[in-house]
Amino acid sequence: MEKIKMTTPLVEMDGDEMTRILWKMIKEELILPYVDLKTEYYDLGLPERDKTDDRITVEAAEATKKYGVAVKCATITPNAQRMTEYNLHQMWKSPNGTIRSLLDGTVFRTPITIPSIKPAVKSWEKPITIARHAYGDVYKNVELRAGEAGVAKLVFEGESGAREELVIHEFKAPGVLQGMHNTDKSITSFAHACFKFAVDTRQDLWFSTKDTISKKYDARFREIFDEVYKDYKSDFERLGIEYFYTLIDDAVARVIRSRGGFIWACKNYDGDVMSDMVSTAFGSLAMMTSVLVSPDGKYEYEAAHGTVTRHYYKHLKGEETSTNPMATIFAWSGALRKRGELDNLPQLVKYADNLEDACFDTLNDGIVTKDLVNLMEGVEPKAVNSADFLHAIRERLDKRMA
Ligand code: NAP
Ligand code: MG
Image (cartoon, protein in one colour):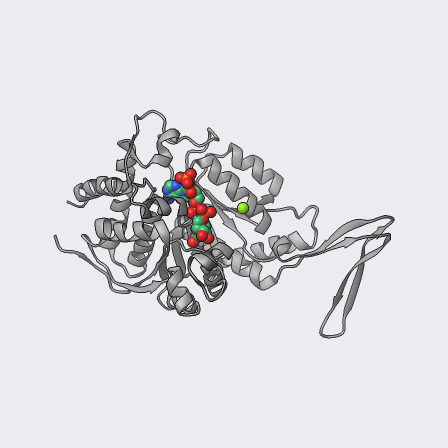
């Protein structure tokens, strides 16, 4: 069979530990036999980041800006223990943080769902995607402990000399206070990324804040979303999808009663909390995909989980591991499908569909990695190691590609 040709390279960002092992296996077993893979390769493994003073991460982000689509393996964010383990020059910043700030992107997380893994919420039939605004609010706050009675004020001094001052509270006794901010620019980028992703995936977009209480701060988020929506309204109407705003409490109630199949855009803190709740309710971290979308439509696909360090140490000792490669495979299929769509390569799009379907065939046949065994209902699961799991997918992919 002739391999599927690509025209534009995919930005490939390699990573660390167990996911780096899986990365190579996935390419060799599931991609290279079918696709004449064209990538621009960046090694974001920790040794290479250290060797290049982390320039490699910036170069990978720049390449993503240039080509538009990237696929990324999980990477270590170093801490004190990693400093000694890898003999590092510096405690390098999180690559995901670096890439996200260079692309000014929003992260969308979606669970991979199968019929035999039932979500904790019975009505959910389709995945729910959470879009979390990743700038500001409580994550960039300043806080103060007021140790005695006194007045707390909010003061803004404009460059023009304009000045606004509000009393926050007249403390009669000790207490606490906090200042937060956000910017129109960041909220606007977030809104664009959300509307683009909704159009892209043909799903409704929900956005929730607490603007009945926060009449300026949260209200500004709502206003910006309403404003940006005007650019996408005709696309939404053409596709028959809907944008709606609702209060966060109403959104929570509706999400639980829903059948799934939509995007829920959340402010930073809401997104932090709700994404953990939604992903846990859907089943397993190993089945959670993630894509970073920039406001100008650049895409970086990855798995939501980390480098699975515990399994890697077992692997180094020569022990067999049963690490789940699903989210990493879906990062590849997502990126290749997007490349295919942008370059008008229907065969590449079809291949990406077949690859995902072959994964579903495998799981539906009960062949799974260990992490899924206790979650399955209605099929008798057979736990296999990572290599055998990939072989099983390969067999089914061969049939679908024939
Ligand atoms: P993790 O790698 O996601 O793993 C946490 C635990 O979740 C694992 O020990 C494993 O549980 C389970 N798990 C996660 N993915 C799995 C998979 N594919 N198959 C089977 N089980 C899976 O998180 P971590 O241990 O907190 O972090 C490890 C390293 O990853 C850290 O250095 C961190 O900086 C990095 N990290 C990177 C990213 C990223 O690049 N996007 C994200 C998060 C963390 P059991 O051990 O019980 O089997
Ligand atoms: Mg969290």
